[in-house]
Amino acid sequence: MNELDSLVASAQALFAQSTTPADLENAKAQFLGKSGRITELMKGLGALSVEEKKSQGAVINVAKQAIEVEKANKLIPEYQAKIATINTALTALKADTANLVKNKATIDKYSAAVRSYEAAIKAYSTVGKQGERSEKAKAQALAQYENSKTDIDSTLGMAQLICAKGF
Image (cartoon, rainbow, N blue to C red):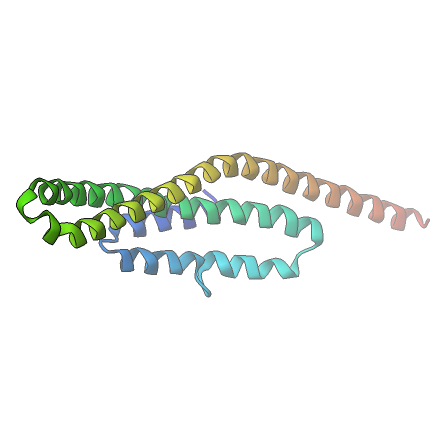
């Protein structure tokens, strides 16, 4: 397991332990925040060559997206549960026809909350699909990185050979 895989696993563990949305955001910040671990790795790309920046940056971005997917996987079931709870309350409020006018504001508020949670679920579901594409990108980026290392090693070997021969 490399460093990035270990960071994703750590994020997954922290997300699993999170019991509130604030805990979840704090856990995410440890990895993707201003001074988060992934952010620090991204900052370190400046010292690399252009080819290494491309390949390492792609690999780091895959880890970043994997962390976002883990967060989404934690939130989606919670949001679905909240929608179910709100829908139960809505059904009860709508069934109380004697107080329908009085309950209208609450019904509207609950309906808006359901739409908001549904929009969040849709957005987080998109993150998961990006994660699947990211796995392919990760494999390509790793292959590109390995090829770059091989090219650099062979170029250095040729340069040493030329210097040794006195050309």
